[in-house]
Amino acid sequence: MVLHYGIIAVAAITDRFLHAVVEAGDTIEAIASRSLAKAQEKAEEYGVRKAYGAYEQVYTDPDVDIVYIAVNNANHGKEIKAALHHGKHVVCEKPIALSCEEARELFAFAKQKQLFLMEAQKSLFLPVTQDIRDILQRQTLGKLRQVVMSASFSNPAAAWMHDALQGGVVYGSASYTIEYLHYLLQPHTIHASAMGTQEAQGAIDRVSMNFLFDDVLVNSRISMKEETPQQALFYFDKGDIRIPNYWKAREYFIMLHGVEQRKKHPCVYEMKYEAAHIHACLENGLLESPIMDAKRSTVCCFLVDEIMRQLSSKEALYCIDEEESCYDL
Image 1 (tube, rainbow, N blue to C red):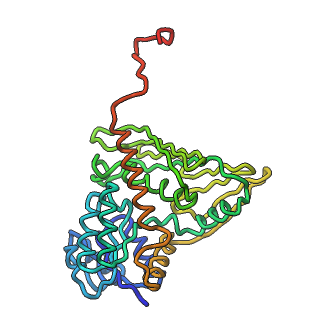
Image 2: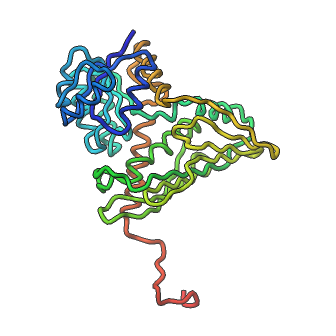
Image 3: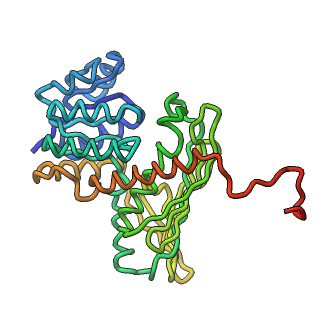
């Protein structure tokens, strides 16, 4: 079985997905962009037969089985619905939607149409992630107590990333933390709180999110202002694990009895594992990924809704006037 992909939008992430599809043994049937010239340039670069200047042309192309959507966040829902309406399976870049309600509607529509819909979340399919899950399940390092995560990307160029209604670090990257840990920890209960700052345009430019996944404490900091370590730290009773670039990890480090061990899983295109999973799902007639399923996506959207609600609140637990001294409190 060979899947014939249609690519919706020429974005920064598109190249890596194109390579991943080819490594999975599938093919790119068409590339579409609002700029026909961009679509033609990318199609020529990758030897793709068809280039379109309108997304609708991909949705109505009878040779396309499945589409990969990489448009800006605000248009994810619109393009998913259009693709499903025309009978195409869909993989959409994260976030699948900008609200829990919209996510539920999209998955319900896919179920009604008997079509595959999955949010692209490459981190869940990495060999490093599978190793960490095995360590957690076997309790090789004892009980997990805390997770500390940090990530940053300085001053993104795309204008929509500075749009308060779709951009910023929460809509753009909170799903890496939430869906990654939801998969690894399989929690029954989740508590969440957050603090952050806004840039002039209104987008959240820095956030510190705190979670309690059952009894595991989690802190995740994301910034698009300053550079921070790009890593996840897992603290167990008997040792700890450090994962550089956890969302695209190719290695990790275990500290046990004062000795650090390095585990490597080298690859060129980290999205190939995700592409292979999509292929396997459709080859086996599945209309939902058993790993990146509707529940995981909607739980994430629910938590993002709550985080954004907290961040939009102007209330403070206590505000200290600059002229007050600590003795007056």
